[in-house]
Each structure stands twice: as structure tokens, then as C-alpha cells.
Image (cartoon, rainbow over all chains, first blue to last red; front, top):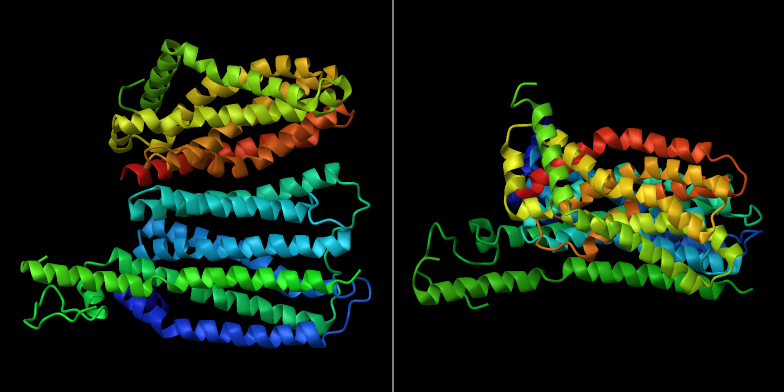
Length: 262
Length: 50
Length: 227
């Protein structure tokens, strides 16, 4: 077995996964914050104005990475769902459903910042633009996944059902986006120009954007791992390793000491 | 039109929503561990194995 | 045909579902009544002006069909999940996807087909262009099976809970967006003198894609719910 496969199998064990997450979580969070600080300083204070859009293009440093993350996290959820359904790996179920809230948050941010960008640019907060509309549908899909997970009592069944919904949604996302573009060209007068940035982008604008794309991914890793840790603890709450983590003697080896008061 | 109010609003939305997500992800750990300890203490008082 | 083969099992399930549908034929009328009532609400809300109504008629008919279909979905697996026959189907050793396909076919025959047949009446009441009526029927004939297929996957996902309620709408409606867009788009193209064939072909392509995939997804969802 090569090292990667071995690592993958080890990760399937909840205590190993918990320890891994505990080790790497701070790194993800602090590097995300540091990269965000540097990138936003450059993007907001140092990069020059766009001669067409004035300052409003500065929203893209958060808008575009958030929109990317909205789709990226849905893909991650569907992959976790696939692994969970095919190999029944508990950690994959947990990681999939732990990704949903942060994915929904990024999608909501993409929508809100998009409409805040639209107000000075198009003169209105909301137009039925193809991108805004398909992002709205994506947000509904996230709500569906979260709602389904919450509504089923059996946690493992709930996670697998939510994973399957993520797979169904993933198959549908390209179809939905294509249909929305098709609908948009059917109805939208072409006078409203909806392209958000020109294809040639100045390097001084590009690198803060790419840095923010990296930072949002690191933040996603932190958020999903944190939620997954909590869910692992909840699911394994009767097990020895969790009791030891809480500072309690294990069930298998009951000690005579008086337990520490919490 | 001055664009900066919209830019500030957009960045505020970004940070507030992500902060809410971060609180949701990070809170609950202490509560969960305390709950586990409390349960173990009750089990111990009852004197039997859980 | 020998007993115990997958095809006999699927046919037996289909016959049973159709028999149930026939015994409760008054219930089967409910989606039609619902569609008729919703279609009546639109002129009441928008005003009786004929020109405006005829412009939005195709869209209204499509929305009512999507909603009527949605209402019928909760019952698709609910009864079988409650009395345990869904578990029996899952462990019967027959391919569950085929059985799910039979159930979806029965659902379409009980809901989608009657809605397709009654839709021209609704469209006529709303004043849709006469030339667009055949296109509406064609679009519904392609689109309602899609609604049944996609909806059945979502309904199967909710069997593990006691009542699906509003959640089913949250699951189904985003996934039916493309059907609505292409279906209503075909009608609008026909009503405004354009060419509806592109939208109809998209619907047909969607049906070709969903026909093999949706029963598989449905079967996977049933296995998760009953395991």
C-alpha cells in the first residue's frame, strides 16, 4: 500500500482524524487571516483605480473568491457524499456535512457582494442576471442539503442522504447554470452589460485576487475541520478516547480516583 | 457616484458572515466536553458502570 | 415470462400501483383540481386584462404544473415506507432501480399525464396563443416525466423522516429550474412566433439523461432511508 492510500485509511479512524484536525486547524486559520490581511491591503489601498468602474471593482477581491468557493465546496460535498455512500467512511460523511454551512455562507456572500457591486454599476441591487440567478439557486441547494440533514433523526442516515442530495445537485448544477444562461439571453435585453471584468486583468489586481482565493480555501479547511471535530466528538461520545480527551478515566479501565469536577 | 460606501458594506457583509460561520464552527466544543464530564460524574455517583 | 425475474417484479409493482390509483381515483383528481385552482388565482391577482394574461399564460401553466406535481410527490414512497413494504422491496433481491422506475412510471401516469392533458384547457382559459397549444402539450409531455423522475429522487431522500412538509419543496424546486425554464421557454418561443425546437430538444435531452440516472439515484436514496 502506498503512503497516500495508507494515510487515507488511517484518516477513516475518528481518533486519528481528530488528532490530525487538532494539529492543523490553527495553521489553516492563521495563514488564512495573514494572507487576507496582506491581499486586502494591496487590493484596497495600493492597487490603482479601474478607469471604467472607478473603485467599485475592489469588491471583486471578496466577491469572486466567494463565488468560486460556493461552487468548490459543493463539489467537495458531493465527493465526500460519494465516498460516504460507496465506502461508508464515517469521516467522509462528517466532512461532507461539515462543509455545508461554510459553503452556504460563501454563496450568500457572493450574492450580497454581487448585488452591492450592482447598485453603483447597474443602478439597482438586483437584476435577474444569469450569474446572480444561478448563484441564488445554488444557495437553495445548500439550504436543501442542510435542511435534509437536520430533518432526519439518525445522524448517519442523515449525512448519507445529504451526501446523495449533494451528488444529485452536482449533476444538476451545470444544467441549471446552462439553462439560466439560456433563459437570460431569451429575456434580457443585451443593452445591460453583465460581464464583471475584462478578460485582460492588470497583474496588480490579479495577484490579490488569487491570494484571496487561496485564503478562502484555507479558511474553508479550518471551518470544515472544526465542525467535523465537533461532530466526531458527538458521534463518538461514549468511546474511551473521547472520555480521555475530556480528562476522564476510560470505561474499560475504571480508576478508583474521584473524578475531576467539570 | 461615490463607490466607497458599497465597498465598505460588501466587506462588512464578508467579514460578518464569515465571523458568524467561525463562531458556529468553534463554539460548542467546551459545552460538549463539559457535558461529557458531567455525564461521567453522574454515572460515578450512581456507583455503577455506565 | 417466468415469475421472479426483474421484469415480472417491475410489472407486478406497476400493476399494483395502477390498481391502487384506480381504486382511489377521486384522490388522483386532486392535482388537477389544484392546478385549476392555482391557474384561477393568477387572473384574480393580476387582473382580467386579456393581453397581459395571454403573454404570461405559458409561464402560469408551467408553474401550476410544477406545483401540482410537487404536492403529489410526498405520497410517492410515504405509505410504503410506513407499512414496511419499502423495506421488503429493498431486500427482495430484485433490482431496486427497476422497481423505482416502475413506481415513477405509475406516478407519471397518475399525475403528469393527466396534467399534460388538462393543460391546454388551462392555457385556453388564460388566452394563450392558439399556435402555442401543441407546443405546450409537447413540452409538458417531455417535461412532466422529468418532474416525476427528479421529484422521486427527492421524495425517496425524505422517507427516513416522519413528514417531509416544506422540506420537499426546498429539495425539489431548485432541481426543477431547468425543466421550468426550457418548458416555459418553448411555449414562449412558439407564442411569439419563434422556433421552439431548441427548448424542446433540451427537454428531450434532459429526459434521456434522467431516464437511466434518476431511478439509480432513487434506489440509492431508498437504500439509505431503509438501511
